[in-house]
Image (spheres, rainbow, N blue to C red):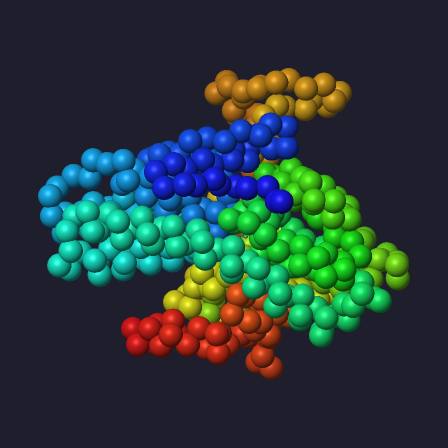
Length: 387
Ligand SMILES: CSC[C@H]1O[C@H](OP(=O)(O)O)[C@H](O)[C@@H]1O
C-alpha cells in the first residue's frame, strides 16, 4: 500500500499537506476552486499529475455542492470555463494542468449543446473523476514499459539487478498512485530487477529527502539519499557492485522535439549521466507532452519566492547551528539580504535524453537528436498540425 496524495469520493476531496511531510501527516479538506488553487500554488500538493487531479476534483466538489449560478446549460459552461481558467494559473510550468483544463472544457462544451444545466455539471464531475481513475492505469503502464526498456537496453535482469538514480518526487505523492519515474522503480522492485535506488535531496523544496525518501522507506525499497551535488561522485566512483544503469526522472512538460522541463537540477544530472555513460530516461504520461511548443525555449519556467532558499524547513539555521524558529527578515534588514534566484524547473535538451517512457510506449531519441511522438500520439499530432 503506497501513500496517497489525495482521497476522493463524490462530493468530498482530501489533499495531503506535503509541506508538513515527513514530520506530520495531515489531510486538508478541499471543497472549492479557491482551496484547490491555494493547495497547488502553496505546493501543499505538487507533482504535475497531482496538480491536474486536485484542480479538477476541487472544482468537481464545488459544483457537486453548488449552487451553480444561472439556469441554462450555456451559463453553466461559461461558469466552469471561468473557474478552469483561474485554476490553470495556479502553477505555469506543468502542462498536465493545462491539458486537463482543455479536456474538461471540451467535455462540458459537448454536453452544453442541448443538455440541461445539471447535465453540464454531471458531465464535468464524470470527466474529473475519469482523470483520477486514468492516472493510476497510466502509471502502471509507464512502470511496465520502463522496466521492459531497462531490461532490453540497460541489461536489467534478476541475475544482474540494476541501480538507478531519481530526482525530485514522482511517486504516489505526485500522482494518484504508483508514480511515473518512481513507478518504474516500483515495477523494477516488484520484478526483482532493482539492486538499489539513489534519490537526490532536491533542494530547495526537498522533494527527495522529504517525500521520495519517505515513500521508499515506507515500502522498504533499498535506497540511499544523497545531496544534489553528490551525483557526479556517485557516478564517477561507482563501484561495480552498484551497477548504475540509469537516471530516471519525471517531467512537467515535454515539448515537441523532446526537450523536457523538470525539477531544477535535472539538466545537470543529464550532463553528468552523459559524461559517465549512464542512461537518462524521462518517465511521463502523454498528458505531460506539449506538442504545440516546438522546443524547450518556449517553456515558461516558474520562479518561486526567495524564502524557499533562505529559510530551511520554516526556520533559519544560524552559523552556530542553533535554530531560530520562524525568523522573519524585516524590511530594515532587507538591504543586507543575499540575492536569490529560485527557478523551480530547468530544461534538459533532447540530445541528453535516451528515452521518454509514456503509458503508450517508449520513444527513443532519433538520429537527428530529437523525438518523434507521432507513433504514440497520432491524433494529437494531427490536431496540432492542422492548426
Ligand atoms: C510526476 S511529478 C512530475 C514533476 O513535478 C515535480 O515538480 P513539483 O514538485 O515542483 O510539482 C517534479 O518536477 C516532478 O518531476
